[in-house]
Length: 278
Image (cartoon, rainbow, N blue to C red):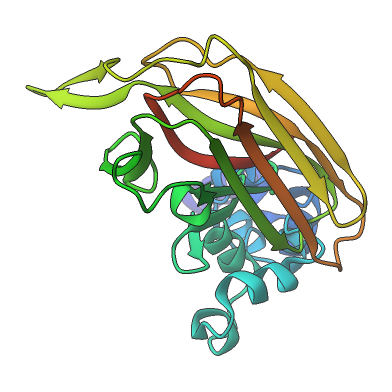
């Protein structure tokens, strides 16, 4: 009898487990996660089963995707079965769009910034129209690990310098900066060390290079810069464009010129044009 009484007292003294984060309904957790940025959501997904399940909710990730993400998918992937046949969830779509996806024959790359979900783009020198590119007396293609495209266009010497490009794309609503990624000097690598040859660098200190930008809806920008600092990759700002209608493709044209024929110029590497949210 005493043993029975003691067991009863012990059972009554043991408090019932208190509710924890794992007891929260997934719908409530998902509602909270929708206010966080993607890296925070991924970290909290490892907390427990409720957070892991909530982190997969479509409405959480749809709020992180651009409003016109379906137009972006159609432009970049066209008939890629990954999107059109497998019925990926919104989280998997976000992850896929955050990788650097090539399109237009590999001359362009586009991805979403992992934290903000905003669109970023690279256009390689192969995707640009370069005056004299087919004449090896002036231009050559150089393989290099310093470019995301594994090669750059290298100018030895020319009188008339012009690089032109354009892109038609359904840019999500926002403001974007357009930059030319350039370097004076030829990149080299010896014994594992990065080097730069300035053998052909000349003419860029006499006249500035002109950078121009225009869009189909009338936006325009013009800037001028003297190219400098051999051996350093520099992003030269061509201008800013604003997209207000995510449902409509915008054509953007951009160029870099130095057409003063009183002197030659050379020793320039053209890597890419960068379009980045600002």
